[in-house]
Each structure stands twice: as C-alpha cells, then as structure tokens.
Amino acid sequence: MPVSSYLLLNGLRFHYLNWGGGGRPLVLLHGLASNARIWDLTAPRLVEAGYRVLALDQRSHGLTDPADAGFDFASVTRDLHAFLEALDLQRPLLVGHSWGASTVLSYAAARPVGPLAPAGLVMVDGGLFALNEAPGMTWEKAEALLRPPDLDGLPAEELRARLRRMLGDVYTDQIGDILLANFRLDEDDRIYRRLPIPQHMQAARAIYEKKTFDLFARVRCPVLVCPATEQPRDERAAQFLALKRAGAARVAAQPNVTVRVFEDTLHDIPLHRPAELAQAIAEFGAGLPA
View 1: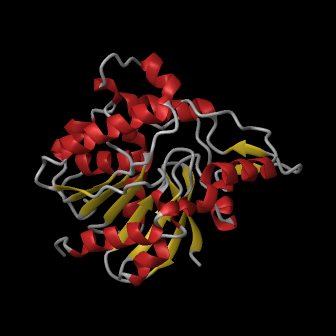
View 2: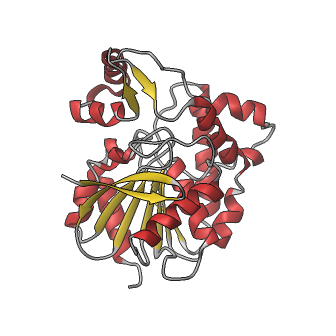
C-alpha cells in the first residue's frame, strides 16, 4: 500500500501517494477530474521494475486543496516543479495520463535542462490534441466537446451502477472505488465533484489553446506516446479518435518520440491494461541515460 503524504506548495496543501522503491524517481500525474489513485494498479508493478514511484493529486483533485484558479499549463507546471523541488526528485521519468500528459509535456518544454528536467516522458492517451488547429474548430465547439456531465447529487450507488454498465467486464469493485474517489460524498452518500465545472472548463480552455506541436518541438528528452484506440461509441468519441490518430502520426516523425498504440483499450489505460502499461513504461525507462 502507498503512503499518503502532504506538502505545502504554491499556497496549497498538495496530497501525494508514495509507493517507495529505489532507483530513478518516477512521477505519475492523473487526468482532468481524476485523482492519484488511478495509478493504484500500475504503480506497484513499476516499483517491482526498479523505480521510486510517486503520484501527485493536482490542484483541486483528489485530496489536494481546492483552488479557484490556476488551471492553465503555466500554473500546473509550476505546481509540478515545486513538487519535484520539494522532494529533490532529480532527472525524473514523468508519466501523465490524459490532461496529465499535457502537463508533463508542457513541463518538459519549459524546463529542458537542469537537475529537475525530465530524463524522459510517457504520455498516456493524452496531450496529442491540437483542437485549435482542427478544421472548423472554435472555442464554442470545443467547449461543448469538453464539458463534463453534471453529476452532483447523484447517489454513489447509482454511479457504481453506471460504471458497471459502461465498463462491462473491465469493472471491478477496486476500479469502482478508484473512480468514486474523483468525488466527495455527503452524509447521504451522494457524490459531488472535487473539481467544480467552472474550474474544469478553465482547464479545458487551456487544453484548447495549447500549441501542442510547438511544445513537442521544444522537448529534448525521449518521449513515449501511448494512445488508446477503441471502437467509437458516438460522434464525439469518433472526433477525438481522429484527432488522436492525426496527432500521433505527426509526432512520430520526431526522432525523440516513440509511439506505442494500445489497441482496443479504454481511455483509462492505467485501469484497463495496467500490466501492459507498466511493462511499456519500464522498458522505455530502461533505455534512458542515467
């Protein structure tokens, strides 16, 4: 079991999980409206592979303090830098899922050299969108694509039932617990978002405005990109899949980028394919310079 700890960074109390281990520091970042526990199935395997493994709850996520602002990439990369600096995590391997992938990409682009610069990046089904470059795309269209459902007040057991229907055979009680940790519960066992929708949409606007391929061009370390592909269930999913495939093809031309596609896999690769993901990360990390 990981050790749950806190640090005061940039005026907020940040929560993180520490699985221990030796060797190179490996820092895991969750996606938007998620939490550090999404790595519960993957992290122990990375410890076995020889890494010192930690996962951070980003601002307004998990057990980290809420914040009204600071969801642009300049702010969240400052949070990441403060975390690395506080724990003296030198030359880390940074692994981000979804929005977290964009965070580690932005961090590596901003800090290509120095003791806290990453030795390598792993981007798990995220960071490949260039929404502002998509034909006909406007912020108004992107806003509709990126707005989450309002689940506040839903009974926790109803959320579990929806997850069982959505995930099918992938669902387990442990996965249900991990996903339920995205919310706080009231005394009546009803769920409420830890990341309110206005703050969620601040982050979404930053995703829309991000110059994805300019960032890739500024990254000096090796990068492993791990997109997931599954049969789209609706037009929205089909749009995201097309953008993801186009982005993966574009960055694959860079000499420091390797693409490893997870076929027939859900967006939450750390929950659906934890063993395969851990193996891909460990093999990539083994090839990094000391």
